[in-house]
Amino acid sequence: MERGERLFPGSRGKGLQPRTQEVLDDLGVMDAVRAAGGPYPPMMGWEDGRRLGAFEMIVRTGPTPGTPYHDIWMLPQWRTAEILYARLRELGGEVEFGAACTALTQDADGVTAHLAYADGSAEAVRAAYAVAADGGRSTVRKALGIGMAGESVDPLPRLVADIELTGLERDHWHVWQQAKGGGLSLCPLARTGLFQMLAQYDDADAVPDPAPEAVRRLIAERSHLAASDVGEVRWTSPFRVRAAMAERFREGRVFLVGDAAHIHSPAGGQGLNTSVQDAYNLGWKLGAVLRGGADPVLLDSYEEERMPVAAGVLGISTRIHRAGMEGNAKEPRRTAEVHQLGLTYRGAALAVDQRRLDESALRAGDRAPDAPCALPDGTPFRLFDAFRGPQMTVLALGDTEAPGGAEASGDTEAPGGAEPPAPNRASVRTYRVGGPAPDLLDPDGHIRDGYGDQGVFVIRPDGHVGYTADHAADHADEMAGYLTRLGT
Ligand SMILES: Cc1cc2nc3c(=O)[nH]c(=O)nc-3n(C[C@H](O)[C@H](O)[C@H](O)COP(=O)(O)OP(=O)(O)OC[C@H]3O[C@@H](n4cnc5c(N)ncnc54)[C@H](O)[C@@H]3O)c2cc1C
Image (cartoon, rainbow, N blue to C red; front, top):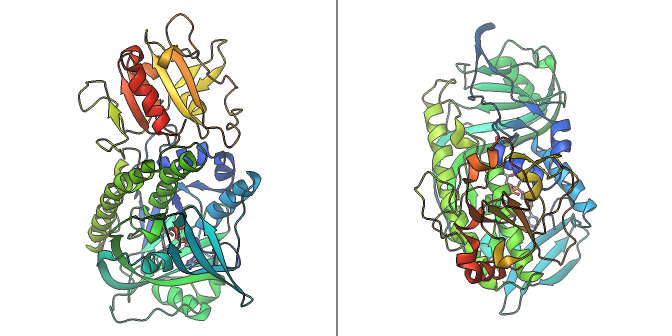
């Protein structure tokens, strides 16, 4: 349910990190994301109406066989929300708008959410579990009595706005770092005709004025643009930068995800991306418990896996923000640490390694890399095609047997054609690579490069390696037990 009458209108988190793009690929919306967004433009510094020159804030990298999505992709958050909402409806889901959760209680069997509707009516809704994705001021988090520990990262107020603007070309992200009163940036929002304005106020006691006329005045004061260059001001939001994390991400049958669990500086573009990963981590586990009959103890792994990630991301965005406060817009450049491709759940309870390899090898808990490969008839295929969908995937490499001696059940649809299995069916797809009857060929050795020559890997629905062994036959019972634990 959503308190607002419609989807949130602001551009806010406008950068999709490579790992989030992988998630969106898995959800089947990457074509829409590509069509609606664009790459980040280079930056352009300005002072006294003069260009200071172009520079790059991000370190751009090329794709590799293991990482097809390599750079941040710009998509205003309202568009990401629209695309995901459309996909949800396509899959039979719905969001109830105009319904605010005002209180929440729980007992041994379920959760009762008290809802207030825009027309003044109220209702109590009962569910087995609840997921609180109600933002940084989370009503649910407060109702559960979960505290938020954190700090103010920067005392200076800021104003963000989506505006129509003429007089500025759209092939750069323009910054006035030394503007009187505070820095100003105007970023063209790919394929929208709009710019996202971000203004900082040098005076910690300043109160940003979000009125359209005040936004026009501010741009005229801090840049060479005229107030009349600013057209419609679509959305504004004053904010201060804080970094904080909930003391717990779970209370009984209620889970906190996204900003309800952690809030960040926008520096480094981590907030939205971390929120997407939270939901991706939790969603399949709830499905496994509710539909697949998995032991609810599986849900304990959500907090165990996500809290350390959130803490790490908080550290990264605070560090980038504070370095930016030093006054040099060019530093620090955003490197691969913000891509979220290296996040791992190594050492957590669901990460089981029977392979004894060094730290640099792919281990249980790590993100499962992609690899271009081929079906037995030579049709190009990718491991991400194999992983796509809500099932577990078993990759059996070399001369190892498929788990339990089971017949390989590798789906062999052409790339992009793989439909997720029907709901209510927790399934395992097995792909043998090598051996006498392979399901996948590895002509260029990309699977070998990512996974090695030999071994068996269970890939979770969220694309992380869950279990590894050198030979499935040596661990058949354990591996079958592992898969049962995950609701298959
Ligand atoms: C000004 C600003 C700039 C940002 N810039 C960036 C950026 O550059 N990069 C980045 O990655 N992230 C950025 N973020 C952060 C990013 O927008 C958030 O991390 C992301 O929106 C979190 O998603 P969420 O769903 O957890 O929370 P939200 O997006 O806040 O969504 C919460 C939703 O819950 C609804 N709601 C609240 N209370 C209730 C209730 N009681 N009952 C029912 N519904 C309720 C709200 O109406 C809202 O729609 C920015 C955030 C802000 C505010």
